[in-house]
Image (tube, rainbow, N blue to C red; front, side, top):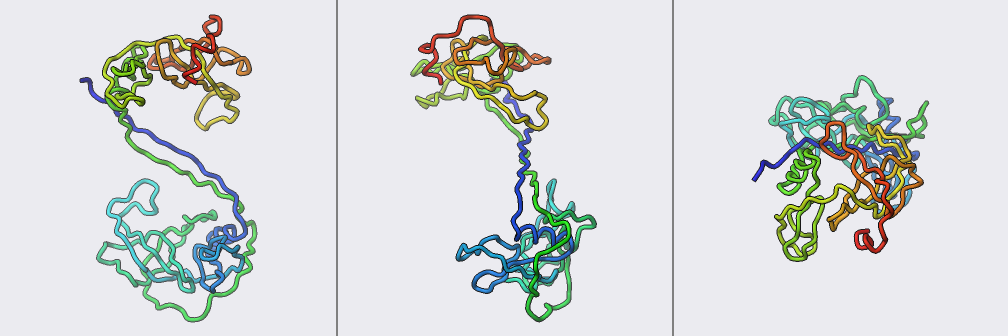
Length: 315
């Protein structure tokens, strides 16, 4: 058995959202070194503020300012910080109930060691040197010996100059992908400009890309079959939004292609033809990438379109 392939893989999606008056006031307040909460229907002060009462689901609008100091309600030690976390040295994740608030805020506590952290300890916000209107404007919490200040939190109108009205949150997942034995064989054969599938010993269908087992019968598939290289477009979509870091002009067509000899359609981009001329039944062939390891896209072969009955089961 040949070696199973592995490769680092990053899945990244920047999530963009607009802010209502409550979240706008909270994030703009952080930029101005002010912590804003909201008063719920039962009088509790919720920090971070929610746009709706967490108990009654009623809309919340009554903003208040709370202190930048608070008390740790619970914690967990993080001995090995990862990329993108608040601190590069070991720290504690803490839930902090800020003075004047009735709920806790999750953030990092900069402490010299886990023995220096305890439930009930007093902490204060360490503000970031540069603030943009995000939760990261709180660089972290740090130990603070002063007792809670008395009194009630002050009402706040939520008005700031140049308020933050939207945020973009970069969601990212880094991991190592191992395609397994079946797809490792498939990828290695693509490097030889061959496309292989695997035949089910029970139903005799050939699956491309191979999965190592028949999705219909549930039995192992270990017989390799070369398919294609030509195939038929079974269905397709027109892409009108340009993806970041993808050097392809829009609009373009992404299609399901049933390779000759295969019983499962794979997906690939269609090129060499105007997007509005792509159609079901179009006969196509691969155009290999410059490094020859995989098809960059598929283009028309010039053959007559395939009869619908020949691919209707693969749509």
